[in-house]
Image 1 (tube, rainbow over the protein chains, first blue to last red):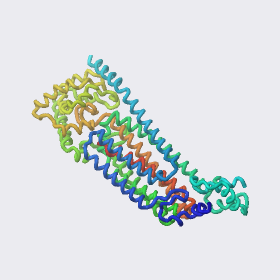
Image 2: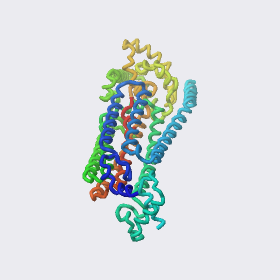
Image 3: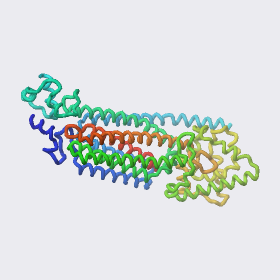
Image 4: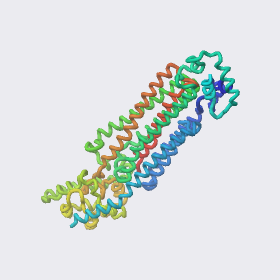
Length: 131
Length: 394
């Protein structure tokens, strides 16, 4: 009991190295923050340079999105402390991601659903015009 | 006294569960000699602990849950725009290929790096606040604010270029430059740029000779493909022709096609008939002209960008895809909303700087810095997706 009271009052006194889980929240060490930034910048260079290779229109988009997602995961995990944070915050965040995915996938499948009808309509219209 | 017990039990991490008996004893020892009411030692020791919270930990956790819920709504908020982007890109890929040549990838990449650096300083500022490193905290907040201003400054330069070049959303969309005249296009597809220019010259020559011969065709054809009325006027036959690869040969043919196209006058504006038949005859005409068939390198980038071919706004001269202005609506809304978030972030960071100047933050009170940093990281996160989606279209 008393050691907890002590550590909550002076977290840095007992654990100056940064790997500290006894304050109100985890303290991220500087070397980790800097290396995450390094990785993020590296991935930015990668995603720009990969556009000069033709992987097909879909391929380039997929690669760009994969790189963006890796970057986003790095930011969320380390910069936003989710690795050490309460799991409930992680669940909250993943829920929002899940609903975004649902939103996007439902809309795109719905959009594609009417392609045939639209094409048939246009073909019919073109035929009418030809007569 | 019984209401004091949970207060002490909250102080340690919830993972460590001390024996209840010892806990109660401790609570009594701690608070036995304290004035009851507002002057409890925890609030006395923590001037920033609001009266409705029992402990700094409780206050911090409540705030953190609050900011995460807010970020959740922000993600969903932006999802609407990402959805609009997805639908429009699925419908009109050529518009995105066309428009991305107008965006400055270099400035976009620099802005990405600026935001990432500011994300580091924001995360570092949280650490500074947690450890009570007041000088470093102020420095990191100042760097973050500078990066944010840098981001908006670069964004301003980009917007300014767009405004000057007529790349505006909606009816104001009137690009001053053709896509194949852009350095970004020429660098990527030099042959296609050259070919497009040749097509334009040929069309101009044709126009001149036709006016001499008093053929009324150009006016009819010019009005045959207005943007507004052809929203749905994309003949599937022509579209499939483009897909199968017979279309790469068409654009040259389309230009040559003018004399043959009175056929197009029979159609009502907007719904042009399947182009395949006239294209084939014109193709032979092209070869007769001795120009030869255009190569794939010359034609493919132009078709992909909707400059020529079935998706172009104008069938006679190399132009731009229909409804290209919608991209700029999407672009301005997405980057604009993001920019507003950056501007709000600057305001909040200045507020945090003012608080940090008073050395308010320390191990037991760093929540505001943490929450601001979380918001800032989310703004960064959205840009991480915006950058490849808008600037790095292949």
